[in-house]
Image (cartoon, rainbow, N blue to C red; front, side):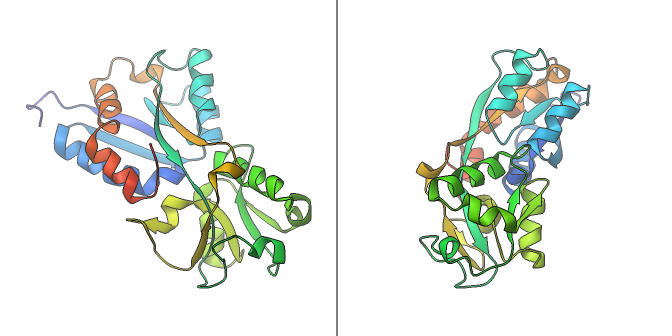
Amino acid sequence: MLADGQAAEVAVAVASNFTAPMQRIAADFERDTGHKATLSFGATGKFYAQISHGAPFEVLLSADDETPARLENEGHAVKGSRFTYAIGRLVLWSPQPGRVDAQGAVLAKADFNRLAIANPKTAPYGAAAIEALTQLGELTRLQGRFVQGENIAQTHQFVISGNAELGFVARSQVFKDGQLTGGSAWIVPAKLHSPIRQDAVILNKGRANPAAEALMQYLRGDKAKAALRAFGYEY
């Protein structure tokens, strides 16, 4: 814990798929370092637009590796600060037990009316879902059934609320400590889509903030990695 007067606050833009683990990590971070992380959750594509237009974020925890690299190349982020903090996993999920089988054959049967996916233009998990459906040869047949969420949090909510019977969500939203928290799910094989590498980067507004660098170091540590494992991420 830092001595009085040394603690700082850092404004963090967090991809919505990483909500639950980051809430845990932020609490541990404040307790262990004295620094405070103020979290905002949303779609990576929306954060990119906001940061490009001067939004006061100091660190970005992206849902992909392309956006932080782009921000760095365009001069909005600190060169050399970027690293992969997590690798996400895509899951086909329904809140109804037994609805989704362990092989994902429910997609071929198509005995559902609505399939929720995140906007593939702004949400990397949505892009991964499109890739997986393309690899499975199901995209053309199913795209007329899509209910599209702005981000993965809204996509998850569409399924919970019944606006879609099933949807492609982040594993972290429906698994905890290796166990499915409810319903039924198929963990989409990683070979069906590009790796969901989630990169973190210090933004220009966080360049001189000691809490920004401290958070980046903390994300590489054992407590953060324990949270990643608990919510089904790899690293």
